[in-house]
Length: 475
Image: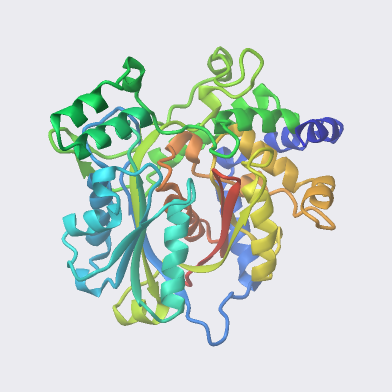
């Protein structure tokens, strides 16, 4: 597929170059965008459906997202998840006994707290009678946590659910090799000295080689960075374009941070350290400095570098999701409705990172909307090349017809509405926590900019993807 895509897309108009001419527009024209959004949404109707419960997100918070190996390095995942839950309790003042269920997403599990949702909930003071479970779906794990919450509420099983996610890349489980593990288990079962000596005699020095968590796809043995590099090549996306997009993300994130727009961030007093108040991975550089970095995956000719990739991140997030009638009865003014959502999956070899391209048209059709109806786009940024490849695929009739079975393209999201407060490239990407950040960014942007509909989308390992429609709650 890659060679075919490369041949075809290098002969198409360079959509991403066209789009990037406008990539800095939100830095200088946010007032015009807000005014346009406000006027545009007056005629839009709600997505409420008869005889179906309206489900709302009341509010959401996250710990500051930090580069792994920094202030959170001595913690455990449940410490961060507990901090997010505590922050949500403080932000919303929701009574702990009013929460019917808690769901958290995570990817690399700490074996001591495999159900991190439960351990974090108990640590945050929730009743031991409140059920909690943990889900994993790679980079869309907290997306799955939220949509599981939606299902519980829509079915009438619950009225109030807390969903969230956590990842601590500073301390990942490193196992003994399988041979060493087997020998240790056999040794534990041996009952006599002769049996123990027999087991020990089989020991070899190479048994001591550690086994690190996989950084590659199990089905393909390829790292996500390699996939991003190949995807960028297939869609003829240059190194310069990728660096330009990464600079856009960092610049917009820095502006949002300076202007206090990242209101979902709550301070966290790290035990034995100072209180952390903001993300520490936002670092606007220059194209000249970025150009000096060497390829990170495919050497020496690759285009994916540390500067145009998301970085290993520690962090946690949590959102309070309710049935609308319950929220109003408790005196809350919700931020947004959670509407239609869609999960997709593709070939993990050649389309690993194209989840947003496949999920976006499906969720729009399900909601009865078009791209023109969306006021705020919040897409997960795993790599600049991944984002630009998705934009290019979404704007290609050829790709829609040959790979998606569609008659026409879904269209290009306007860059002036796209990730206006930065994205995963700059804010960070704790695998299990990013989905909640995306939803809260969309909800907060709709309130700030006067829009009505937001579209959240993300890719994930395994060739999977997710998209959701968020509707602003009426003021």
